[in-house]
Amino acid sequence: MHAVISPHDRMYSLLLPTTPRLQVTEYLIADDACEVVLEVITAFDTNVPILRVAYEALGNLGNDAAAAGKLVELGAVKSSSTAIQNFDYEKDLV
Image (cartoon, rainbow, N blue to C red; front, top):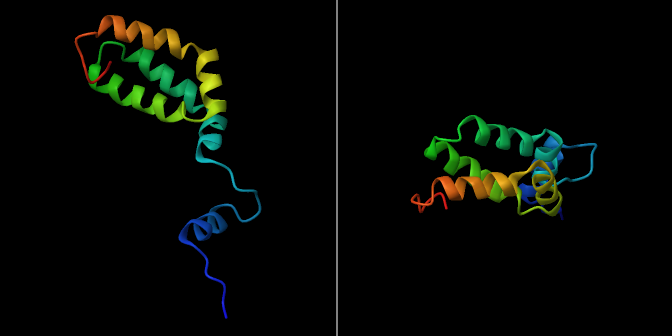
């Protein structure tokens, strides 16, 4: 009888045959995703559609404790407060 391998395990075995399993956010943090998202927010601070996507990304990253800590260190809270003040009329953004 053969062992059943889930698609999830198969994906990891193909992508990471010699390394332990890591959460996606660990890769994103290692590749400076937090910094990049905050750079996008700074560069497009008046573009509401881009800010919506960027803040959605921050929210997803912030679900990971390590990423949340890094975001706080990088000033994401201040950035978010500024956006809320500047775009309080944009209910999708706030």
